[in-house]
Image 1 (cartoon, rainbow, N blue to C red):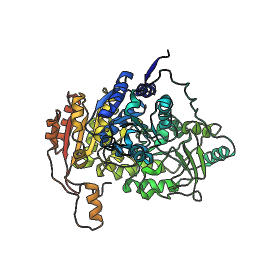
Image 2: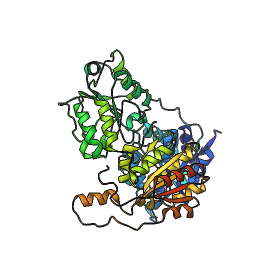
Image 3: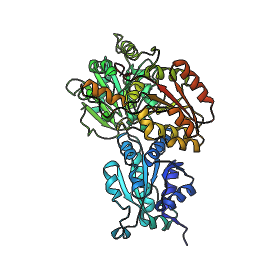
Image 4: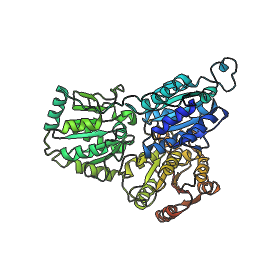
Amino acid sequence: MPETIRAADALARRLYAAGCRTAFGMPGGEVLTLIDALESAGIRFVLTKHENAAGFMAEGVHHRDQAPGILVGTIGPGTLNGVNTVANALQDQVPLIVLSGCVDADEAQTYTHQVVDQAAVFKPLTKASFTLNPGAAHVIADKAVSIAVEGNHGPVHIDVPISVADTHVPATPPAPRAVATPVAPTGADLDTARTWLATAKRPVMIVGVGAMNQGASADVIRFAQHHIVPVITSYKAKGMIPEDHALALGGAGLSPLADKTLVPFVQFADLIICVGYDPVEMRPGWRDVWTPQSHNVIDISPVPNHHYMHQSTLNFVADCAATLQALSDGTAPHDTWTGGEIEAARSALAAAFPTDPEWGPAAVIDTCRQVMPRNTLASVDSGAHRILLSQMWGTYAPRDLMQSSALCTMGCAIPLAIGAKLASPDLPVICFTGDAGFLMVPGELATAAELGLTPIFVVFVDASLALIEKKQRERQLSNHGVDFGKHDFAAMGRAFGGAGVSVHTREELTQALQDAQTADTFTVIAAMIERGAYDGKI
């Protein structure tokens, strides 16, 4: 008689084969078989305090091993708690497998306790949504993994009915689907693109998350160096070229101060090459910075341009690395930007974000970057501090700075750091969060303690939603709904089993960082800053 396994085992084994080794979530009776199957397959289930944080921990792991993340939620409120992180995964192109428990279809006709149409909720927030069934358990598992990592990466949802999880299916899956190989463009458009590159006097590359997901960092650097093309990245793609490289112009996204240098630089270019660039990360100031009539624009992307924020002259739906190589083949390098514009832009950006203030958010960031090793993994939450840090925090490898770039959701930085530290325990990990973002997820400090992890959590404490309060003042509106109490965050760190210290100077912060790097627990460092400290800084 042929060997059989549970349908849940078929799903778990396919996820293991995709490189998944950790799943995050909170159990309920409806997912107990699923969790058992994950553990049996070699995928550790980590109990978190909230499903939304669980999804970001899964993303933190994904940035280290590049396998799809796994979020597990029980029926109803458990699964729906993860909606925010799933929406973030769709916009930020994170492959996330969302496994939700549900009652059997026939039972749902007469039993309504906690029953909602979970598939309908997740349909607009995912690349695909399935309901596991015994006859197609292997196929659905394979589809989920394939869809999550093809084209623009993203989340895939699978509802797992209680009885289906336990139903036995053949142990041997069908033959795997053939994997599509990367392709590069050919033909007349490629010839045109090569001509533009060969004659461009001021080419520039704008590199985004699509290139990062395709592992094209080395190809971007090689192309930039060979053809002397400066590189701007989106925030999510920071580190695709080391930011101390002479051709690196840092990250663009939400900073009007940086845009004063970067937007005119791009507009002065005579060839713009977009590589895996998705403007969902950009603020409105980047809309229509160029047009096909004003510039020669080459767009290289895993999927067609449906966003319409920019349009290009040539659109290559192709592999980023292979296309850069195809452009470069047979195209001789020549001098570009001969007027010193690249060096001038780098100098202007450095001057716009000075590292020498005695104290304040810029001093906090500069001190942390000086004290922490070059290979430090960092996460940053949404808020004014994120805009400043995304300009000031030198990033030297892809995925070394993690953030919610497209959805810009708060409460992501702490779980991202926990996931990264769990996956890379030998690397230093630091998290930057505002006090409001910290207050959304303090329970996950307990998760860090239970896992024996030692990330460093730096909290910018000004008792305000600083970015929104700043916008409120700039519009000359009265102060409402942006202020809250100044809490003892260091004490919270100690209460959850870690170390905690409040700092008011660079010297105190330096000592706290040095101590934290040798501590056997996590550390919360509360950096006390003044209200309005971001005025004129971002």
